[in-house]
Each structure stands twice: as structure tokens, then as C-alpha cells.
Image (cartoon, rainbow, N blue to C red; front, side, top):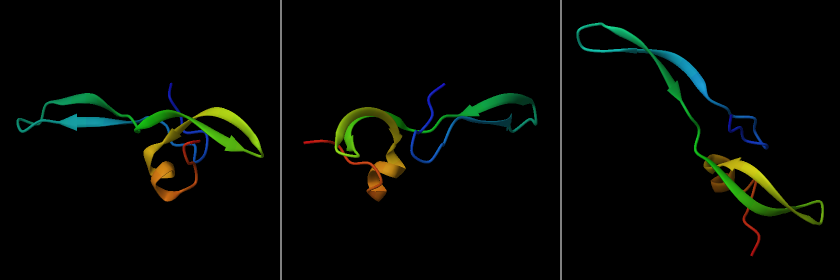
Length: 62
């Protein structure tokens, strides 16, 4: 399963409830992107969520 390698965000599970109150399982997936970045002076490919990319914790290598 896709998981952010920076913050550890992964899929979460719950129950979807319709208007008639029928219940079914639901899965919320984080917005994960594979990016090439530099960590410790070496270029690496990591999976990072868009929240971490927007916050500047992981930036795309130019």
C-alpha cells in the first residue's frame, strides 16, 4: 500500500453511511506521489504525500 516515507501517512478505514443509513466499508487514500529528491547529498526516489511536498519537507529535484 502507498505510504508517505516522510510523515508515514497511509490509508485509513471507516464506515460510509448513506442517507437511508445503510453502512458499507470505505477507504480514504492519501495523495501519494513518487518524486526524485536529494536526501543527504544523494538523489533518491521516494513516495511523498502532497502535504509534505507543499510544506517543503520534500522538494522535487530540478
